[in-house]
Amino acid sequence: DTEVTQTPKHLVMGMTNKKSLKCEQHMGHRAMYWYKQKAKKPPELMFVYSYEKLSINESVPSRFSPECPNSSLLNLHLHALQPEDSALYLCASSQVGTAFNQPQHFGDGTRLSIL
Amino acid sequence: AQKVTQAQTEISVVEKEDVTLDCVYETRDTTYYLFWYKQPPSGELVFLIRRNSFDEQNEISGRYSWNFQKSTSSFNFTITASQVVDSAVYFCALSEGYSGAGSYQLTFGKGTKLSVIP
Image (spheres, each protein chain N blue to C red):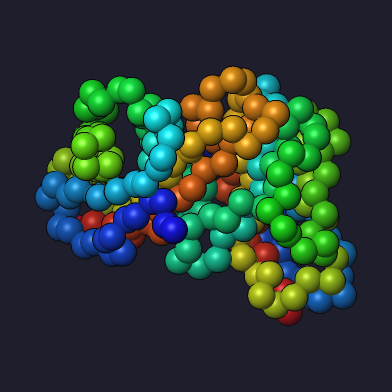
């Protein structure tokens, strides 16, 4: 079983809906990541939180709003999404430190479909 | 410029055959890390191995082995006696350094889809 838990596993929403994706880890990791993955493509980094502070925003549209309420939780708030936002959204976590060799541990993802 | 190249888009093998997945990377850093991840149809990316740029020792873990060659900037992955459960997309990834505040970015290759036929 994965140590990074994402909910929901599947989400279908209309373009005017507001929904949130949730991610939880209890490995004591202080870096957490959101990725977007389209079919047959590699994951694309969206956001990185380090010590609960946003450290990277890869020019993601404002209709995606991340939140890290504590060291174990990471949310992605969705509003007014477009059909092209349909994808698998992956959460990951890793240890932090002076070395960048810590593997990122991924959740199962949320399959999002925008109608 | 693409930094991680997985030239094989799809590979099919018959069960029990050996298969090698190729990964070629590009970086100007002298210190970097390479990773392999497995993504089964369920979606989760499963960490398989990491290797730092100073350690060129090959590694074997059960049926899996990795060949890291800095001279050719390659980090290839071999599955011996493949099984149906090995069917998945395999990603090679590179991390080159700080993104800030202790985190880092992974650059993924496009992935290789492996199908193991019974």
